[in-house]
Image (cartoon, rainbow, N blue to C red; front, side, top):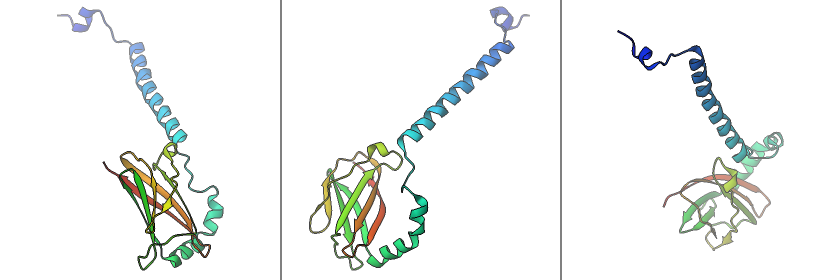
Length: 158
């Protein structure tokens, strides 16, 4: 009785095995290179320009921010972003300067800088965000010149 391989005329040789291995690992390497290039191209990986200089003043900055006693919250409602800044007593605070960047946690190409306007209770700006997780990088200057920095998670659901 002849084997099925002999009947079909196909013989598995070393070249077939080599071609299979090259094709298999070629696909894996191609996918890895593509994913690495996407990761590098879409996420700068930087929170601050010079981490050493920033770290030298870290404890002082944290103490200054804690002295202010501010709490910051971000919310997405009906195509608007709302930011509230309150003091330790829960009273709305209007900092001397305010700046926010809204973006995805891992992709800087979606970063947006809303033009925030004071409403008497907080700040708001028109900003259409798609569903998912967003990060708000918030910075403000208090009346006494203290810089306040905070990074907020914002989950948008529709």
